[in-house]
Structures are given as structure tokens and as C-alpha cells.
Image 1 (spheres, rainbow, N blue to C red):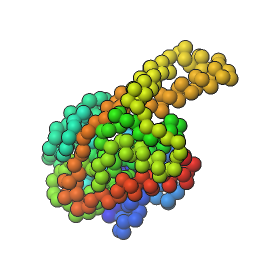
Image 2: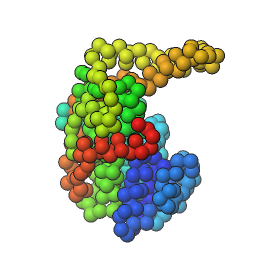
Image 3: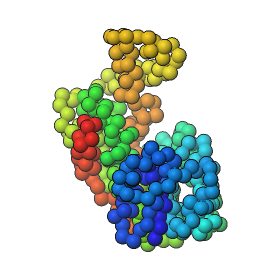
Amino acid sequence: MRVIVFGAGGTVGGWILEQLSQTPGIEQIGCVRRWASAVRPARRGIPLVQVDLERGDLREVVRGADSVVNAAMLPAQREADLVESLYRACNEMGVGRFIQMSSAAVYGRSEGEVDETHPPCPCDAYSAGKALMESRLLAAAQTAFTQVFILRPSIVYGPFSTAWTERYVRRILAARWRNLGAGGQGTCNLIHGLDLASMVVAAATGEVPAGNHVLNVNGPDAITWNQYIELLGDALEIPARHPLSGLEYQARTAAASLLRLGKNFQWVRTLRRRSRGTARAAILSAQQMTDLYPDETERALLARRVHYSAARATEVLRIAPAITATEGIRDSAQWCRRHGIA
């Protein structure tokens, strides 16, 4: 069986290729937009090709594939067009299955228990792009040969995760977070990258029901963001951490928001370039604060109490995520120490 993975240079694409390499009888090919992103799969000797989804004949790229996985990061305003173009190329070339990565972000500000019967209600450009892409893809698949799986992962963490592992480790180290108080009481829907990759491989290579499927993908545990931060700090053995009071959290995130608004102004860039010594250090420190504390969208995420049910994915794909939050956080901490992040 031949499986082609687009977005092979990304975090999720790398995990998928590594899981495929451990699956007997699979010929895999990774597609990257830039060779500079290909280091991780290249080290494992995985065959790679350079492909730009906006150029070239995609039919030739997917020729002979049994399954195609698209894990490429695409601009929100172009994602629907590019995914539909790739899907139509797969259909024309007789590809059996097309697995498309989406996101639980399509549910927007929804709270409570959310399964696939809950309609998408995007709240920003990113989620709106995902929702439009899904609707266009499902419409194209209604009268096509190639079976479609749309996977909606929640918070993808673990080794190589820049947004949800590495960034939080750096924050805990710099700010000595123990928790975020009331600001971190939302549900942290963690799915370890290896569990996500296993679900993708099952969709691409396993025995699955006929028809097109939209599936939430989430991990086995539902913890709060405060618990995630505390468990991650404990696993890293970071000392002298402290909880943030509600007032402290609000003040610091508000200050970061103001700095974020101004950091790209011309006068800020000029001041940073011309400053020396203590003044320059103060400016750089202020700018680092914009990464240290979450913006408005992330603050809403950290406070949102929602759980994305993955029961249907387990039923359809015949596999359940197995890495607990405790195990995954310990794995994340070990990886960060090994690579000098912590």
C-alpha cells in the first residue's frame, strides 16, 4: 500500500510518517514545500519530494497512491481552494482515501460536551477557514470515488509541538507559573501527537466503514489548563513556581496586549534599533512579555469549559487514544530536557 503525506515537514506530518514507518507493508512518501523543513523525516530515511500545492500537476504527485494524507499548514483564505484542488486530483487518479487534517477550532466558543453532531460555529479567521474547507471538501466528495476522512484534533502536544509543549515550557521557565488561577480553569483537551498519528494511520490503512467521515480526535483525559501547567512544571522539576492571582493574571495579560499592539509600530522598531545597554534590554524584555502571556483568543481558550468527544472516532477507526495526560506530559518533559529547551 502506498501512502502519500503532504505537510511532511510539519509537526503532525512528521509524527504520521514515523508511525507509517512502523506499519508493515506500507510504502510512504512525504511531500514538503521547502527542503529546509525536511530534516526530521530525512533523518529517518523517509522518501521525500518537494511539492507546492499552489503550483504544478498534483495528479502526477498522487499517481499510484492508495491513500493521501493532507497535514499541510495552509493560509486560511486559500485553504478551501487548495484542499479541494488536491482532493479532485486524488479522485481523478483513483486514490482510495483522502485524510484531511482540520481542527476542533471549528466549534468556536461552544462549551459543554461537543460531538460531531454539533454544527461548526467559527469565531475567527483560522476556524472560519477550516469550516469553509470542510464544507467544500464534503460537497466535492458527495459524487466522487475517493473516500474522505476529516479529522478534528484538539490540543496536539508532545515532542516537536511548538505551540502547546515548547511554548508552555518556556513560559513556565520564564514566569515560574504554577497555574493561572481562574484564568486557567478551562478544559485542556490534550491529544498526544503519537495518538493522533495512530488515528491517521488507521484512517489511511485500516478496515473502515464505507462513506465519508468527520471525526473529533481527542485524548483519554480531560484536565484543566491549570493542571496541565502544574503537571508540566512538576515533570520538568522547575523550582520556585507560584500561582497567579486573578488580578495579577489580568494585569499582566492586559499589559502584554498593549505591548503587542505597539511592537510593530515604526517608532518601536527604531527605538529598539537605536537603543543600547539597559534601555535596549528593557525594550527586549517588554517585547518578550508579548509571547509570555496569552492574547485574547488564547485567554478565551484557557477559560473555556468544553470537551470534544472522540467516541465516534474510536468506533469508526477501531482504535482509541492510549497515552494518558500523565504519560504524555512526562514524555514531553523528557524530550524538552534532551533538546535543551528546559
